[in-house]
Amino acid sequence: MSRVPVSTSGIRSVARSASLERHTQRFLELRRGLEQIEYFCQGTVLKRMMKCGKARCACASDAAKRHGPYFELTYKANGKTVHVQLSPQAAPL
Image (cartoon, rainbow, N blue to C red; front, side):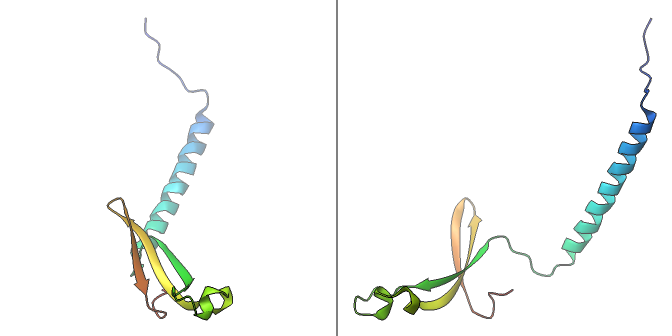
């Protein structure tokens, strides 16, 4: 004689189903929002102040007098780190 499992927690399955439905709807809303973004790029934008390497330049001895700011986008592509110089106008984007 085989037994058929009977759920004694019918309320829980309804609550789980409702919760899953809410999460699914929220996921779809977020995905639609991401699809509306015109430009999306993964990586990190850095603002750097640099030393030029000249021994007599003020930047060599005083960190407050370094050159810049220079903006740089860093991301991974095919397992390698890529650095791209950005213009000051493009950095906030």
